[in-house]
Image 1 (spheres, protein in one colour):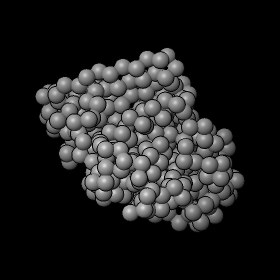
Image 2 (tube, rainbow, N blue to C red; image 1 turned 90 degrees about the vertical axis):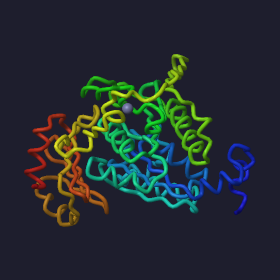
Image 3 (tube, helix red, strand yellow; image 1 turned 135 degrees about the horizontal axis):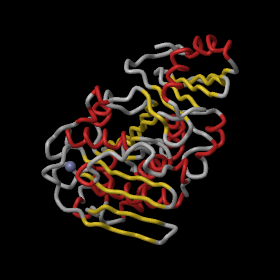
Length: 339
Ligand SMILES: [Zn+2]
């Protein structure tokens, strides 16, 4: 081993033995926005041997204020975040194996995504995906680390199935759509991302080196602007909890899956076909030219269509901007892409 990790192995809680464990570990990062990018950078620098990064979105200029891994070039090229992250992480630590997966995380792939990973970190921006991760991780007995940040406020909690309360033990029902502030409606500042992601990634390191006694065992809440830091001690799992008590994994059931979803305050709707496919993007771009201005790269096709902007990915998933009406988006999708 070269001296890349010398300052980390000098830290007695990790040491050389802990470093070996990190090098042979795998972590799944779900969502590579501000939190996910911060997780990825910290864990790659720390020498976690394998990182699997899954994200459905592409880099935009409005991301650059807080999403540390991305550059103006990534935004200009509209690179998928998972790919842009992988490129940047290779520059940071080429010894780490990074698997970039450009897809929407849903009931059909979550169990597969988590199965070969030691720990799962939450870098998502929505409750639907978090409840899905919670169901899958409890079902397969995987530790995951919940984290969220909006405005100057953040929250995190570490979930070890059957040992500590799961997400549903604490938040029984999923919050209604539009009931919580989002980064797009309330904004967000970068320092709260640093704080939440720092606590999350420290928990990952503790788990991977086997120092679980040092886990914070609480629901941590921070408001970096209001200078309010809280730590609510967690007890044991709730025996009546639907997920970890009754083992009713409803978010993994196909019939509960939305075909389309309004994207968190972005004036956009995502359409995810049930059946996965591998589109010929060049042919699609050609086909869409008669509707308006088309741009295409290796990963997506984008069309300006009337007041809308349609972005189609290779797996046939589409983001339709310019509406938050699912039926309008579906109709545009059906008209232009077919199903
Ligand atoms: Zn529970």
